[in-house]
Amino acid sequence: MEREHTRIIDEQARKPQDTTGSDDMRQQMEKIAREKAETDVVLGTLRERVSVLKDEVERLRRQVHELQQESADKEVKIVQLTKQRSQDKEDMQGLNIALDSKQQELELVSICQLSPIFPDSDGVLRPAQKEIGCQGHGRKYACSTIESCKSP
Image 1 (tube, rainbow, N blue to C red):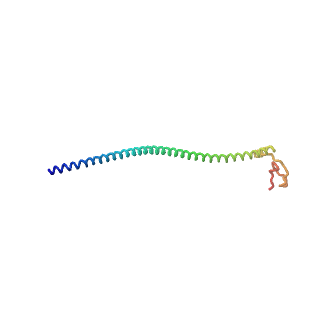
Image 2 (cartoon, rainbow, N blue to C red):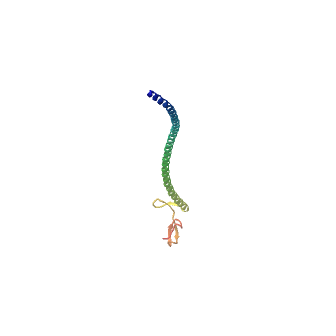
Image 3 (cartoon, rainbow, N blue to C red):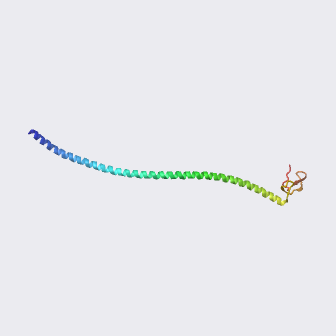
């Protein structure tokens, strides 16, 4: 009987502990549920952030690729323009030489207009030479104009 009495007392003592334990368990479960909900919200936010960052990285990668292509195109254009500039300089030199030649030709033409042109013994056209007294030579010297006669 004592055993039964002890058993009943133990059961009665356990009931408040069970009730207290059950309340503690319920509070722990609620706390865990709240923490899980908060964690789920944070996790969802972080997943969204990761998705946005991945999209941004992809957009930036495409932009870098486009800029690299533009840079390469510009480098090719610079090389082409440099070559064209060099060619233009060569053309300009050639044109300057041609201009000098034409200016000399024009000078000769203006000289020839002062004196008629006749073929010489070799068949080359030359301005007619006049016998004039060249003071630099002290004798008669054949010069096409007085200015062209230089003393030695």
